[in-house]
Length: 387
Image (cartoon, rainbow, N blue to C red; front, side):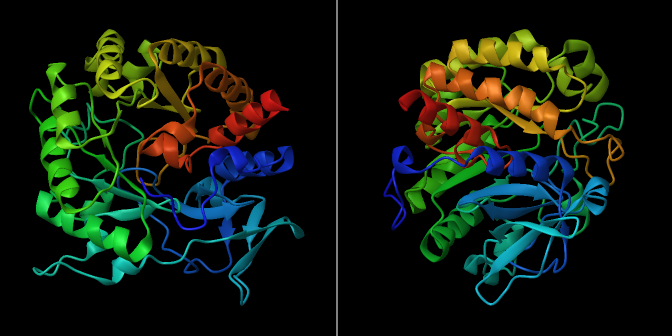
């Protein structure tokens, strides 16, 4: 992949200092009140994650910060309206504590397909340079209140008319090419709701990735539940998917059954088998799993599962849970910054010691890193080891 103009190798980037890492962690736990909600790229409500967030760049690192949640409305942090240079003053109470900025509105958002679908309804900009799409905005888990993941809002953006139910391969290819040419997008995330087929979305990801890679040289991460047959991993790789995400979200079996009853019918044992098989195809560090901290898993449970994943060559992307309005868990508290630091600090050491660097991931959420401050802890640990 051609480096972005002016980009520095990760080894030369100074990691955020302890105060910046603390601020990022606190912003992602508490959220941010905005003096000008329309400043920069639009924030996201509902849909597949990150939802109810806004991209904020602090100390050169772009993170996703909750702005539409109940906790964000009561956050001790606020952001002034941008000045003439686009800088934003972050305050704690009335005290200025840091300067930040908001990424600008992507230029490809101004376009639409020949049949009149806005490009932003097909794919959106996440973080600073990541194109993201939910290929199927429907899910067999979400369609049943009894089986739905209690934190999920995949149907909200569809119900609000901000997206379409099924993005065709041709639409995705068209938008991806425009996003690369107009906005310098550097990699792409394709996730999907789970269809009622045993491949659990692998086929639709293959079709979509093949079309995008035929149109533009853009590294892609595919995300789905473990398919029924491990041969799908080779098919996804052959279709142009560079990295794979299979998300555990919750790691304690009893808690999985309580919070995500439909998804929990795929047992943890199947996930572990699938992780091992996928690493053989995509390579060590090119398979990852989202873990949502703050839903009831203990620190030790998350770190124990992370150690198992790391041993398999899987990058454990631990992110703070964000309660999304309109979901059964909308009033569930977000994890405290102290709880997140108690996980991310040792996890940063673990992934660094194992050589699973987020910077080496070819595409996807772990490479972007905007939904968690894990990469900042990881880089700080790597810099400490070098020093």
